[in-house]
Amino acid sequence: MTDEFDRQRLIEERIRSAEARAVVSLEVIRDRVKSFLISEKGYSENDIECDREFEIIVDGKGTLTSVDYIIKLGDTRFMTIKCSPGSLESRERHAVSFARVVDSHQIPFAVVTDGSEARILDVISGRLISEGLDSIPDRSQAVEVIRSMELIPYPPERLDREKRILLAFDVIKCTEELCE
Image (cartoon, rainbow, N blue to C red; front, side, top):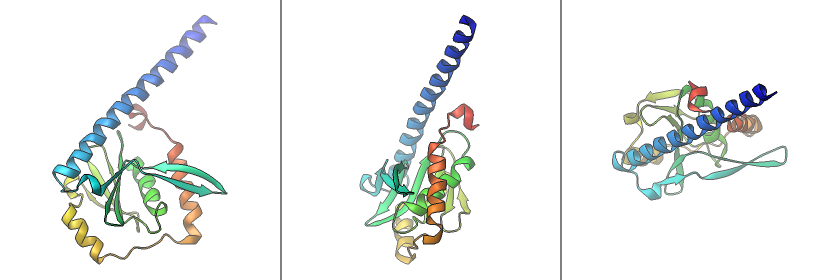
């Protein structure tokens, strides 16, 4: 019985240790990305919503969801940014679902990044449109895009399904070792 108890304790310690490393890694990524947005892409602190929570209601029950950063210029949310250690592709669908359902219109672009690489997605189509941190639009490009774009709400008949997809991803917690 002692061997089984020791084994269980070791497993729990390893999981806690991996979770702690993932939290530290995520904070480093978040800091790097925010600094990049401000120093390289020209956004101001006021343009960046951090950890903004939204209530998602499905079957009459509300659940809070958030994303690392949202770029908001004036009254328009332009781009969401999900920071994550590990596989970026595994976070794309989550980022797109979030951008489709949290506002009155679909937030046009979703980014997933590990702080070194980035994948930029068109939220309307769900397709990858570019890769690399440098391909994230700078503030002046964002202003131009906002002037010419149409803000499109997500189709109401598909909204509950998309909310369920978002919430399913929200419950999946992923340490760096598990994501890779």
